[in-house]
Length: 184
Image (cartoon, rainbow, N blue to C red; front, side, top):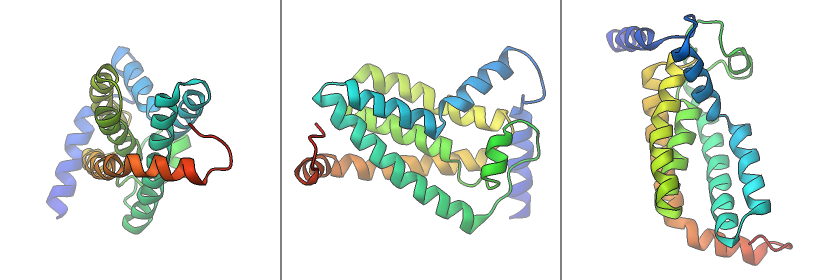
C-alpha cells in the first residue's frame, strides 16, 4: 500500500504547476476555482430564479444532488483523514478542510456533467464533460489533491449522479407537491 501512495504522490507532483508562474498555472487556477461549491450554488439559484420551468427543475435537481454529495464527501474525508499535499496555494481549502480524499471538486464536476447528460441539453453536457476532467486535473496541478483523490471523487460523483438521474422525475414531482411556494 505504501508503494501505491508513493507512486500517487510522485505522479501528482509531476502535474503540479502551483509554484510556476505562467499560462498553465493561470489556467489551472481558473479551472480549480470553477468547481467551487459556492460558485455552483449561486449559479444554480440564479438559474432557478430566472430560468424557464425546465431550467428551474434542472437547477433544483442539481442543487439537491450537490448537497447530498457534499455531505457524503465530508463524511468520507473525516473517516479517511488523508492530508492534502504540502503547499502554499489554496489556503482557503487547506484551512477549512485539511483532508483531501476524495476530492469534492472532482465529485461535483462529474456529478454535474452526468446530470447534464441525462437531464440537460446536449451542448451543455458536452461542455461539462470537457470541463469536469479539467477541474479535476487543475486541483492536482495546484497541489491541493493527489491524483487518487480526484479519481475517487470522479467515481463518487458519477455513482451519485446515476442515482440522482434515476430519481429525478419522482423527486421533482414530490418537491412540487410538498412545497408551500411554487418551485417550478
